[in-house]
Length: 129
Length: 151
Image (cartoon, rainbow over all chains, first blue to last red; front, side, top):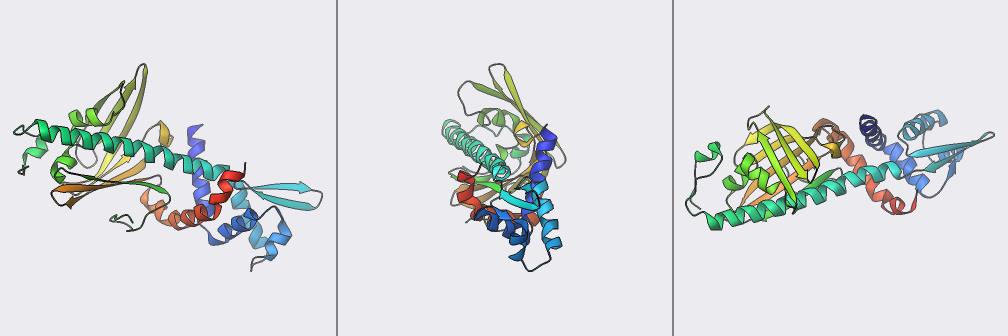
C-alpha cells in the first residue's frame, strides 16, 4: 500500500535523525550484537538505549531475535536501499528531462529568429537573443 | 558543490541536477510554464508523447501526462514560488512519489549569455528535510559498504 510505504520511509528518516541511533547503527554494522553488550558502548542507561532500539526496530533498520533470555540485534539495510532507489530514479529522470529541454531550446533558438515566445507572460520583457 | 538558496551544500536526501544551457534565462524559465513547451521536453523518449495543463500562478496547479502506448503516467503538482527569471518551485506528485507531494526547486542563474540551471528535488517537505538531512548524510556515508552486502 503506497501510503504505508511512505510512512515507513518517514520512520526511516526520523530514526536516523538522532546521533545515538546513528551510533547504534554504526555499531551494528560491525556485526550482530547482544543488547546489553551494545548498550555498554553508550553513555546512557540500558533503558535509554532500549528506547532508541524501539525506534530503530519500528523503522525496520534493526531486527531483534530472542533466544531464551538473550536478545540479539542485527542491522537491516533494506529500508535505506529503498530510499536510495528513489534518489536514483529521479536523478535519471531529471537528467533526461534537462537533456531534452536543452536540445529543444537550442533547436528553437536556431530555427526561430523572430518568432514571439509562446507563453503570454513571456511577452513582457522580451529580450534580444 | 551545489548552490541553493537554502543550504549552499549538496544533500544526500535530495536529487540535485545542474546544467548550463546556452540560452538566456527568461527563455529557459518560460519553457517550464508553457504547456506547449512542456509537452515537447517532458517526453524525450521516442514513442512517448505528453500533454500538459498549466495554471502558472502561485497556488495554481499543473498536470503533465506522459503516454507510452496504452499506459499514461500523470505527474502533477502546485506552484509554490514563481520568480521570473530566477526561481521556480513546485510540488511534484506521481506514482513514483507514492502519490505524496515532494518539492522541486529550479534556480536559473545567469552564466555569460546563457543560463546555469540548478534543479533540486526533495523527497521531504522543507521543514522535515532540515531535521533529517544531517542524519541522512552521515548514515549514507557510514552504511555505503553495508548497503551492498546486507540483505
